[in-house]
Structure formats: C-alpha cells, structure tokens
Length: 251
Image 1 (cartoon, one colour):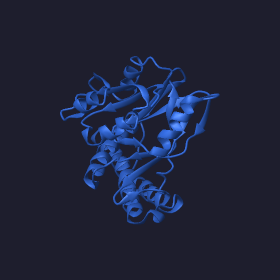
Image 2 (cartoon, rainbow, N blue to C red; image 1 turned 90 degrees about the vertical axis):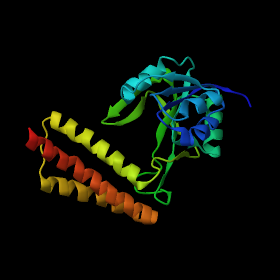
Image 3 (tube, rainbow, N blue to C red; image 1 turned 60 degrees about the vertical axis):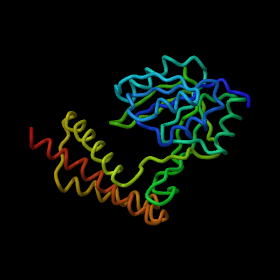
C-alpha cells in the first residue's frame, strides 16, 4: 500500500481499548503521531507497536494540546481522530482518494456515527455530525467551547463518503460522569461571564433540550437509545443552569 503524505494524529489518555483499531485505520498515513497526556494503561505501548511517534505532554486543555501537536507535524495534510474513533473501510478509501487528488479543497468533512446505549445513532442530532478531520495544517486552527473542541478551516471543503465509527461511552455511567464534568465547567464559565438563572429557567432549558433531541431532531426514530439520550440531554441542560443557580447563591 502506498503511503499518503499526511500525519495521522491522535490525542490520548488511557485509550487502550480502541487505539489499535484507530491507528490501524490510519496506517495509510506516512506518519503517525500520538500525543499522550500521561496514560497509565497500555496506550503508549500500543501506539509504539503500531509505529507511531509518541510524545507525552500533561493535559493543558484541548486547544493547547493540539497546538503542541501541530508544532511536531511536518506534513501538509493531517488526518485527526480521537482515541475512540475508527475510520470505516468506505471512509478510509475516500480519504486516501482525496489525499491523492485534493483539488482546490483545504479540508474534507467526515460523517461520524456514534454508538449509544444499544445502537449507532442515525438521528437525535448526532448524525451525520460532519467534522473537518482531514485538513491542510497551514489552513487550520482549533476553537474551544467549554470542554469541547473543533477545527476551524479556511478555504473550500467537501464531504467524504463513509463514517467515522465512534464509541464515546462504554456505558451510561460514563456518560453521566461526562455530563457532571461538562455541566460544571459550563456553569462556571457562565458564572464568570455574569450570567444568572433560576430553577424555572433551568427546567425550561431542560425541557427545550429534550424536545429538540427527541422531536425536532427525530430522536424517537433511534428507539430506546434516542429516548435515553433525550432524557440525559434534559439532565445536561437542567444541571448546567441549576449549577449556575448554586454558584450564584454561594457568591
């Protein structure tokens, strides 16, 4: 197989479960770079066994970690995956074809299919979840919203065929743990910005979030998984604002 002049980039922290498949799906890249935040499992051993260059840098936040990684990339193109993501065969072929002849494009958008509860979601606002994960390094930056990140690209983009296969949570407990983490950060950011809320506002945001996921974004078509996600989305929005209430009262 001919290697494409691109760097396969993965940021890791205790990501041993899916990392081998993740890196295997990127093995068409001429370089593999793993930037680890201090894993205590087999993550770095798996990465080295797959031929990746491993750099260890304590987690400074998503933007700073990607900027650190970008400084160690010499190729024009980057294919970036999370440690729990894998390129499907169709998307892998589409990426390789696009790198062979990128034309006027500076980035390519990859659909992402996420497994939740008992299935891969196809509605609920989680699909196609188009992400610019194949991009020219010189034309790309990183933006952050709370604990979430995304890539900002300049120039023309085109959607590729196939999916990123995503396993965001091993179980519902892990999702609830993430909700606790994310809502606390969001509440603290709103509090620092001088925003206020009450119980009624928290409830209203929660109900609006549930309806958006389950009705407007047709989460009901995702069966039990769609309902579970909509309920947890209510929980997310409600807690984000009720924690703002809590922070305001403490102040």
